[in-house]
Image 1 (tube, rainbow, N blue to C red):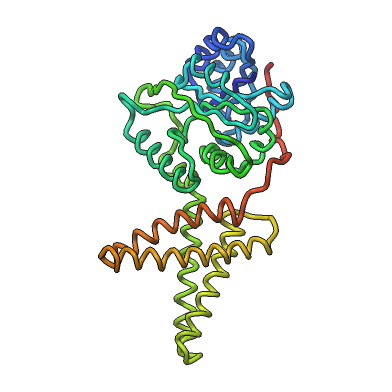
Image 2 (cartoon, rainbow, N blue to C red):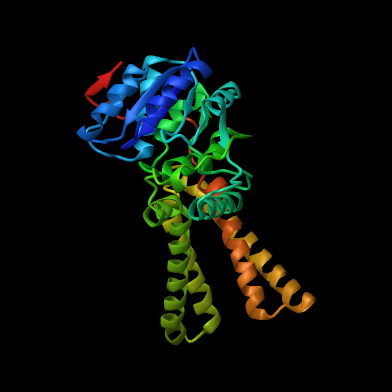
Length: 352
């Protein structure tokens, strides 16, 4: 068992955690990955090493995702076949909860230590987790209470896949959850204690920049949809007077819009490299299903229930946006199965 702790500019709570882990998990090895904290923190990492941890140090800051992948690569090299439990360095995860997550690790599974956000929780943390939780459920169809937890138990058989998940910063952990189902990886969650010290002042999460990174796939999908709509309008306005037939112009505009949207989703949003012909057919089937649902739902809401047209349009389009994203992510442009991936180069400074 490897307990992997990514650390950026930590304080002595890191060493305290390592010492207490010796009691909670006496047979585990603790690996600390310094994510480029710099020479000012040499003393903290020296104390961590004295407390019994192996310390891998990066010369510069790459981000939490990069540090996690480097730690996973180290674990696969130095403890092949062993599970990995990741934990934060700032005292948010107790040794008891870390041990509970470790005990729950099972094949092809990620065990999440889920907080319930009760008590004195900073507003930005409560809001950020709520937004992330709702988005994840809408896009993946899975229910996870704490999508942003850093306490995770990782089965050894999924470590090669985790090395290939993109994202160098906080978005990496969300990308792991989004890609799990396509890889046949089960998400399990156990409740842990909710701890925020000093209003979570030690957190290096940047609310705007890191939130954009986390929600980037959904934002790219929205941008692709807007681009398709722009092509639809532009093509219609150009062809209608040229062809002299509004119906023909509408069909041509829809085809141009669909082609643009398909290509952007394939190359930019989902970065799909699989069978292009199968993806085109699935995209066409999905477009037909979405159109049918749109017509039926609008008719039911506007004519059947009496909902105002504008409100019905907003509700239906919002639901179909999420449905389309989830369907394209899992069915049209699915990620490849677990595969071997390149391992991040380990830094030169290592103390074992």
